[in-house]
Image 1 (cartoon, rainbow, N blue to C red):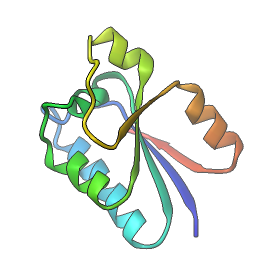
Image 2: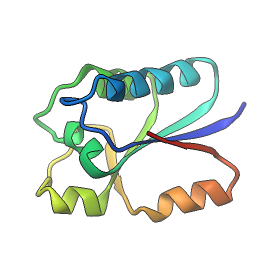
Image 3: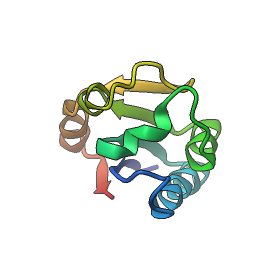
Image 4: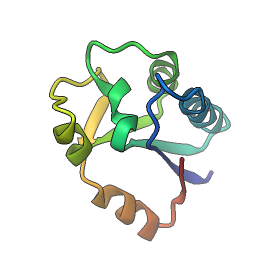
Length: 106
């Protein structure tokens, strides 16, 4: 089993690639890997409690660990998060990289 950290910086309302990134996370999880999705910059927009996006909802339902960058959330005035999304500092990325997680930024 491998460990993957996928970093999403794109707004899914502007780019269909963001949903595809979530689908990659789901596929890796279903293949038995440990997967975390880190939302940063405009990638945090679908993490809002009132927001419904298929990709993020499917990732959470599949058991993908989802984190939203606390600085990006603060910059955008987002306080309430969707169920299952956790806030995290950007240091989570460096910690996971140092622990040997395969990391890809989108």
